[in-house]
Amino acid sequence: MRAAFPLLPALLLTLTACGSKGIEGLQTYTYAAGDHRSGSLVYAENPPAGGAHNPIWQNCGVYSQPLYNEYAVHSLEHGAVWITYRPDLDSAQVDTLKKLVDGRPYTLLSPYDGLPSPVVISAWGAQLKVEKADDARLKAFLDKYEQGPTAPERGAACSGGYSSTR
Image 1 (cartoon, one colour):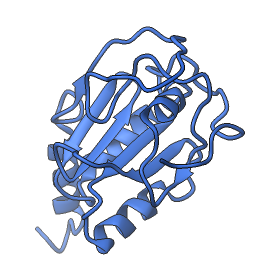
Image 2 (spheres, rainbow, N blue to C red):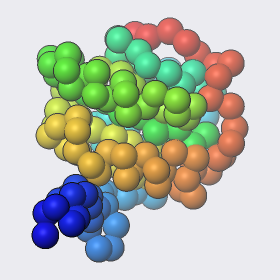
Image 3 (cartoon, one colour):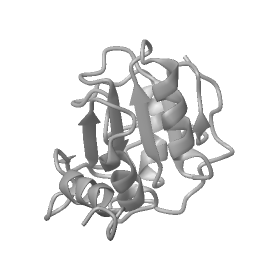
């Protein structure tokens, strides 16, 4: 059977990782949009998956330093997906994450201190925690939430905003 269906194990892994009713381990939240505030804000999730945010958004892209939550959350409101990883994640896994976001215009990738798992992927109102950068659920999350239906301002700019790091 393996010779006849060489891709079957990978397909089964993907179906198992995504579950029959969605992405296994996915947590969802409800936040009102458009709550612009200045200064440092406190968030319920670590990293945040929505809520009040700075009036300026974070430019989408790959960053080697941590981002300010307040700018990144505004990007989530615009339909971006933010992948965060522990700063001590080995370079091979970071490279895997970089390949995952390569060519995707509405993504943020950055290290993040104090994560509850090695990799956390967040969108407006949704979050998933995983142990490894090659977890098939990361791509499933990106496919579902990048410019997805939970983004209150889907299609708004992900460039022309804030481009620095902390």
